[in-house]
Image (cartoon, rainbow, N blue to C red; front, side, top):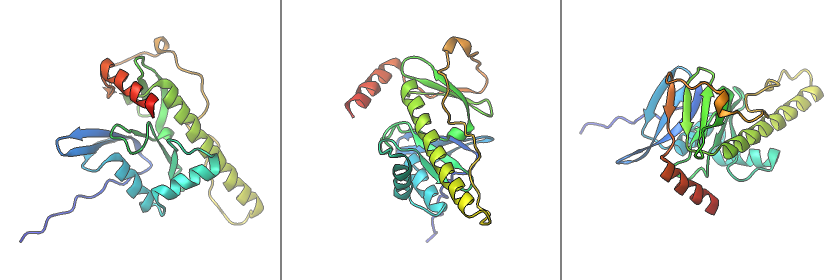
Length: 215
C-alpha cells in the first residue's frame, strides 16, 4: 500500500502580511499573502496561528494569556507569535469564526475606510487588500496591538537596564501599529495595480454587521 504524503503546514514568518479564510467545498482553507509570495494552504487560519505559536516555543493559549497579562485585553486579543522577530498578529473578529482574518501590522503602510463597513489596507510592498471589517474595528485592533508592543518593549528595556550585561534583544522603538489620524478616502489615490477586493457585497456586509453587534 502506498503511503500518503503529509501536507506541510505553513509556518508564519517575518514576511507574512495577512491570512485570509478561503471557503471551499471541503471546508475553510487559508490564503496567505507574504511580502513576495502568495499561497493557498488546506489548513484554517486559526490552525496556522496555533501551530506557528508552537513552532516558536509557546501555545496559542499561552500567547493569549501573555497579552491578557500585559494589556488586560481579553476580547479578540492580538498576540505576539515570535518575540525574536517581533512578529505580531491580530484577528479581525472572534478567532473561532469562519470569516476571521489574521493581520500582521508590522507590514502595514496605511489603512483607510472604504465605506460599507470595509477597510482597505496598503502594505509596505504596495499590495492593497480590501476586507469586510469596519474601519473603527480595524483601528481598535491596531491600537490594541500597539499597546501590546509598547508593554512588551517596556518589560524588555527594564530587564536590560537592570541586567546591562545580559545582551538581551528588545523590540525597536517604533512599530507600524501606532496611533494615527483616520485616513480620508478622497485623499487616497486608488489604483487597479496590486489591489484585491476581499470584501463582501453590501447585503452581506449588513448581515455581518448585525451578527457582530449581537456578539
